[in-house]
Structures are given as C-alpha cells and as structure tokens.
Length: 149
Image: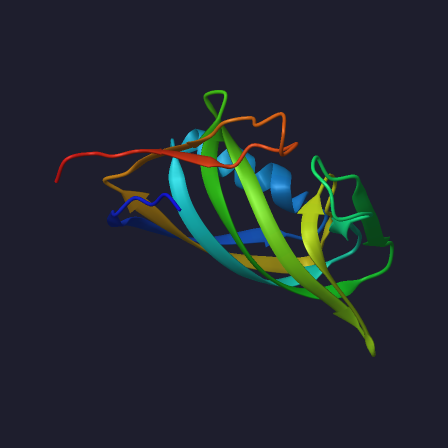
C-alpha cells in the first residue's frame, strides 16, 4: 500500500449540459483550472455510454469486458482526476440504470449527456500523485511522492 495525505482545496460545482460529452467536458475543465489532483461525484443522465465491467479472465494485463447503452440511463458516479504524462486523466466509475436494468463499470470513451449531469469536484492539495503506466498490470495506477507538511 502507498498513500499520501493532503487537504481539500478548491471546490467546483459543475453543470454539464444536454448533448455535451461528459468526460471531454471534465477534461476541459481540469485543463482550464489546472486541476492536478481531485475526487469528484456526479449525478444525472446520459444518452449513451461505454463501460468496462471487469476483465474477461482473472489475469494481468486484463482483457476488458465492454458493456454499454445507447438509450437514456440515469447515472451516479465517483471518480478522480490525476495527471498522466503531464495531462489530466479522468477515472470514473458509474452505475447507470433504466427501468429494472442496471449496469456498473468504468465509464470510457464518448458519453453524451441527456438533459444535465451535475458534478461536484473536490481538489486535493498538498500531495504529489500522478498516474504512471505499469505494463505488467496494463494500466496506469497512481504513483505517490510525498510532500512535506
């Protein structure tokens, strides 16, 4: 286990509007506001989305199982923003439901907003963390450098 201790910095309340791409809008905001470390939560609806819902087999690097939807689903999500190769990277896990059907996974790719998605971003100050690619694992986990307090 590795960890870093920080504190809450700026707090953003964000409205993503109908037709906007959720992940793209979050990336644009992170770049504009120079957000390097943050956690966020969101609620709203998406017209479409693609989810990674686990690996096909229990091995690394994983071969992802893709799921998705092309009709409106309500969503709840939690995610984070950290730098990867010097640019903000969004990592968002979300539950998406319509009627009795519910999907859960890591939201990736295009994600068109239906009506509105509200996002609440809590910036984390006082830590040095970034995503660094790990070829053995097949993804870029967080890597920590400790900052003095």
